[in-house]
Image 1: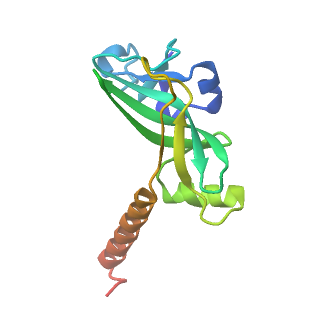
Image 2: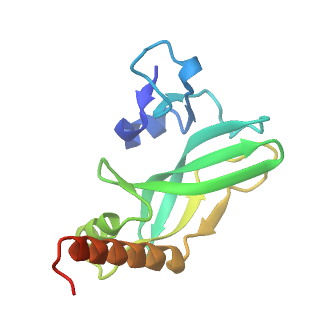
Length: 163
């Protein structure tokens, strides 16, 4: 049954570790759109001519803790792209990278500047022998922070509070 992506929970990924994005033409429900996903019966991410999946992942934090999370996996023939997108804190789905995510994880783990630093898929990609994993570069987090600071400065400038 289709489900809005933002309503996925950790329990959903214990039932089905691989979810597939639905396109408008694949949904019978008029309220469903491309932000809906559907559980699959796949045990590995299939190598299709094209497919986009939300896959269960382990997200490692700076302090070494590992939290459940999800990554978006895009398959286009022989090419596979993996991007970590969310980490679960309890049953909250937090965006990676994200200033609020970093603040909440820091508070929850009681560790200064704690944020996601690496990911590992919890399932294999078809024809691969090891689970994909990679680091989340500090630069990604710093770039996000710089963009947020610039946006805040622009808002203050627009409101006439910054000279």
